[in-house]
Image (tube, rainbow, N blue to C red):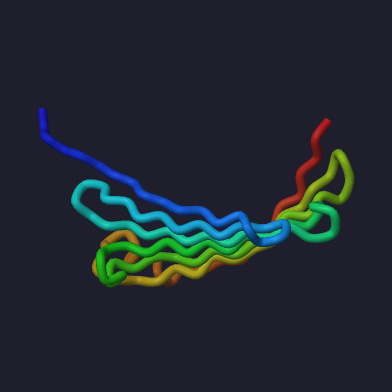
Length: 112
């Protein structure tokens, strides 16, 4: 068995009207990961905006990504999502290999 300890520490602030901000730091397989998220709801919580940044390595040299999206509840059955992802290359192979794969995405969901 390998002696391995992974850890995660995070804080979240919910003092924003209809929103929150969170920050997390993780140590996984001796690699540091950072995540910051901002959420905000609008129009009686039918429109939700989320901004997420994730970076790797202690000095963020490993690369990372930024993802921003809107979720909109059209009614009780229909909802839609629209967003984008921007990848940043760096010393982490997985981030460097996908740095040119930025994308825009959308979905329409029907619940019955």
